[in-house]
Image 1: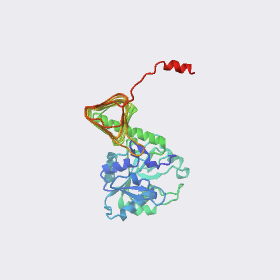
Image 2 (image 1 turned 180 degrees about the vertical axis):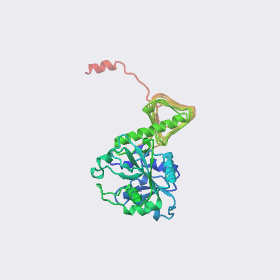
Image 3 (image 1 turned 90 degrees about the vertical axis):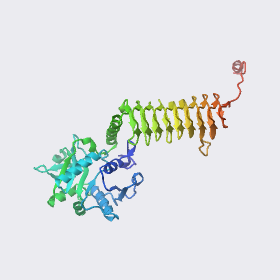
Image 4 (image 1 turned 90 degrees about the horizontal axis):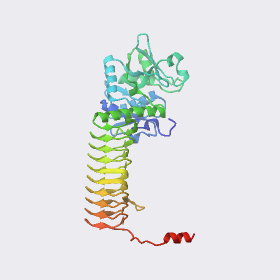
Length: 432
């Protein structure tokens, strides 16, 4: 990946890559989910509750990784059901879903095989292990192709590839893993060698071909990550549009997998909606950036608005052009039409904050909140120096710097009285 970030921690549509197959396994009904990590445990902070961590003591290949997982299972206080199958997913094959996993498990059960691998056909199989079949079409072995010494030219021309996804009979896997050999070009324990050993012992090895190659695409570099991310984004758009959300130009819209959007909402082009953002029904979002916020029914956001974490835009409210809102609650039917920064504020229902209204929420040491009541009107270029409160129905004059509370129904004028100096331009020119 040419990156300091571990491969499976690169993000795909709001989630680390490793969480995509984890969530797929959970959705498919896995009784237990283990993630194999290195001794440094970089994956541990992102794992959800209920997902267990197994440590692979040294980087010795996929066979060593599965051995570490089985050891963690066997050492636990609730040993696995010996009759249950063991599903192995790859952290860098993120688009596999519960449906594809279910089909693989069904194929494994129906075949009676000791091991079933998921394979697919690729126009360009470079970098993938090739599936070698015998004359009867049964799986004979999987040939790695990462190093020239691992495979022949004829084997590298095979287009059927190993996806890195397997189902094993637990006991067969447990008995065979210790027999893996590191005698290969990379000096690693290759998990597909288990298939060779099972077959040599007379066991049945099956392959289930996944017709849609997109769901088993692996990520080997940043270009591959971009391709997978595009496919994931397309699926997210289709899911929302199928639920009644209008996405005007999907190619110019970013929506994280973590986002919730209600029906009859319209997302216009050049909008990014990220993180734990919730958008209600009948909302319009125009060319804006939303992160970890909530927008209720019938609200309007943008164009060129930035909603930062902790923001709530209530029903019917408007956040307009070049407005930034952070950790604030914009009341129902209130308006922040343009050119404003509202941070750490509570704005009551039906208020209107004029152009260039700014909350000065930081005093150099701590953040303070601003409270704006119901039906408040701030004049253009008003600065509210927190902590400060504007009562219901209060007004501020244009150009005011408000440092004291404003009573309900009052007009606050906080600016120096204007004075004109006659002849000032002429005097300035005479002075050079």
